[in-house]
Image 1 (cartoon, rainbow, N blue to C red):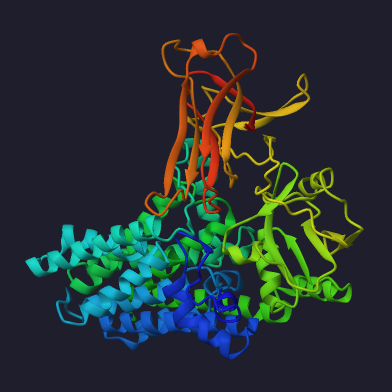
Image 2: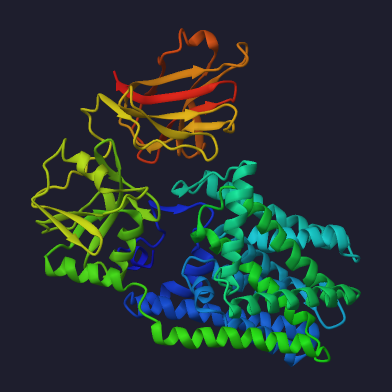
Amino acid sequence: MSLEIWRHNNYLLRDFYLPINTPYLFSDLLPFHLFPQIIFDFNPRCLNIMCYVIFILIIIIFTYIIYKITSSYVNALFFAALMSNMAPLSFGYYVHPVSHNGTILFIGLFILLFLRIDESYVELKTTPVLIPAFILLNAIIFSDSIIIAWFVVPITIYYILMYKNKNSTLNIIIILMNVSIILSYYLKKYFMLHYISMPVQIRDLNTILYVNIPLYVEGMAQLLGLSTDFNILNIINILVILYIILHSSKFLLMNSQKPPVFFMSIYLIVSSAIVFFAYVSSTLCVDIFTTRYLIFTPISIFLLISLAYDKLEYLHTVGLLILIMFSALANYAALETNSDPNIHNYDLINYFKENNLTYGLGGYWDANIISYLSSESVIIRPVTALNGDIVPFRWVASERWFKKEPENIDRYFIIVKENKTLLLNNNDVEKSFRKYKPPSETHMFGGYIIYVFNNQIPYKGFLDNNLNYINYKDSLLIQDGVGSSVDIKQLNSTIFYSNKTLNNPGYLVYGPYISLPPGNYTIEYIVKAENISDSEKKIATIDIFSTYINEDSRVAVDAERDIYLYDLNNSDFQSINLGFSIEDYNEFRLIEFRVFQHGIADLYVHSININKT
């Protein structure tokens, strides 16, 4: 984003696509990264240094909070020692550019701005400093929605249920704090047209128990520096941490009559509980990489341990020293094995330059990082594949990237990983060669396939006025827990299937988030239902759903139809159509074709076809 703002003079990030919940503008980019990047000519080391600076500031501000509450340098220093001696894998989460570390720093600042804390009391402030504090809080809520779970909601719960000195002024403050959430949401949803929403959905019970909770435990183990290897050192480490947590809990219960200790304990526990339930019960939990949503919980644990430290408790002191020593030893061992995590990216960049390849297309996870690390000496634009077309992937991306190519470029390339990936793989790319000219060269390097073209890339998108008929299957998605894709040998095809007993109601099919030119369209849904349990109830609902339709409404259902038993004449696949029209082309209107499974029958979706009439 810094490159886009400064080098390409896009100071307001116009036509720049950002995730609606984490644009990071005021929490990270503007206060910490933009100006250092400009001053040091977008040097990646500057990004690493600033992330480390944020980490140090987090330690300083929360160390100060511990000192304010306990009036003890020892308690404060124990927190600083626990944070600064994190195991290498844990430390990586806290210095990653998109791990919400700027938000955590601002949470510490908000605790000091909104609360008057001392060893003997805690109270909400009503001073004029709250005006700039509220402005800053709104900016951070706008930039990173996770602060709602980490700060706003826990403070609100504490105030409503446990704060004893309520008054009308404080009531207004708490109300305004929560109104900020609503205002920020509507601002981003209805006015920031390039902010992309990813819907969060509730998981089924099996997924919660057997997928999400194990992922939560694994993520927390990584953040706390615990290994899943059951050797003697790891067992000792786990036992020490459990003892310290149990002893700290006992101490905090015994000292709950102290207002600041009680407040911090309730605040941190509520915050951690909210994150736990939100994470394990929803699609926020995807894989181990979504552990970044949990990084405030280990800080909360370290804060509670530091609050509970009592120098008269010998075993507590010994346990803390063992914990710090184990982390220090792990860090020392890592010094000898530490290497540049981006070494493979730099190898790719050098390979591109050696082969005179400076402009191309690739998957999201490779495109932006290579463009940034090379300071745009090698440019890769993020794309995905759809039915033999290579199309823009608009996520942390500028529309400018897909409208104008660099001048004086006579060789282009598409880079994909050899193993299949969700957004772009070699099978998808090679389908485009059936429509357009195949590559002149194919390179293999570092686990990647690089297709090289001496002419225009097969990069077409959906602005082709000759578009008449397209079958959508490869780019359609399935809501978690609703169904799966299965191979049917008789049809020599893969279809979407949902079992009414084993699967949950929900979208068996959604996507592919495309833009279409003006015209009249008929969307053909080829579906089948079996084992219908109630002939009177609707079996499925098909619809056409648009996002970013105009400035007044972010989403709209363009057409919709419920499917009943009488719509399905026999047990074979049936063609059911929906029609809609597009009067004016809007590149920001992303269209989905969805099939909702109501759980009344076993549902099959063979394909979805689009006909332009």
